[in-house]
Image 1: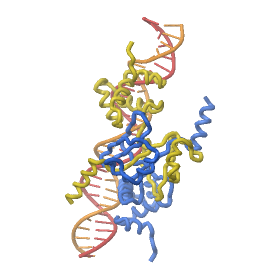
Image 2: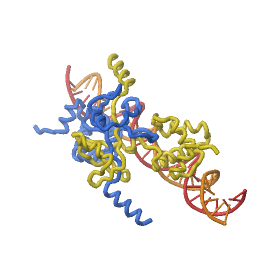
Image 3: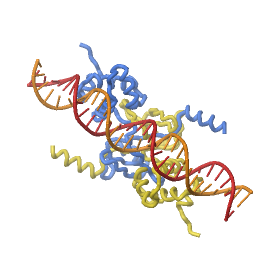
Image 4: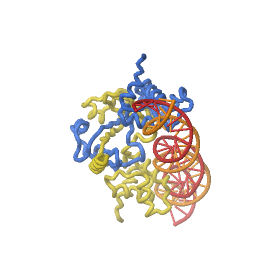
Length: 148
Length: 148
DNA sequence: TTCTTAAATTAGAATTATTCCAAAAGGAGA
DNA sequence: TCTCCTTTTGGAATAATTCTAATTTAAGAA
């Protein structure tokens, strides 16, 4: 009797085990650190399941996230939202209604917020993004600017 | 000669001044802390400019962001991207090619990264999101669960 | 002021990403 | 095996954004 870890993981998470789900989780685990998109997952798994539906990929990723098997890197998906620039601050985003509340930036706070709630906002997770240019793109920018 | 601050702001930012841009910036400034969406801006400004095109709103918001007048709250818009990794970590996102690189979490780092680059990644800005439930939604959840 | 030109605006089409839907298929316990 | 509930499917629908090409406009030069 062979141990199938992805199979077990799905079962332990309380989800029904299906071949599609196993294949999707396998692809996700193999990939490791590449931050795959639904489309990418779809293409990978399609090689093994030619009849796989894109809707299944979306459904499965949603279910996997619900039970904590995976996490969405860019959770503020949906509509673009803007900030009229002011002092640096954080954003408390309600995952239910989408409200975005400003939280004053405070160095200590950045660390603390991972653990404790702020005012009446129940923090479930913290998402930090460093935005900028990777080395490849920085090189590309340099070359482009030289050409001007 | 009256001083029109939004007019001035746009000019100072090095952008061509148009009535649409002035109106959009005015709406954004009046709103203040509400984190408006392109659609919302469009509806507001449409009242004054019945022929305003949604494309203009998108263009203008992009230009405003380019010159730093506003900032996108949820900059990782586009395609959903997932993470399988379990240890807490940050994400370094290339604003040019979209690559998402993992950066090990380190309390000090959270603060430092705002100022200094990480490895070959040139950090331009930091975006922190606290995800969770606002008080209103938490109440709603409670009521829903009671009903079960 | 008028002219000129590059940039901005417009309307609508096109594209991209995601969600919805109803019917068919499949998993798991009795 | 039977049954029920969940999942899967494929396609349509929707939402968000970008593209395109024609028209208009801002702003500096003459």
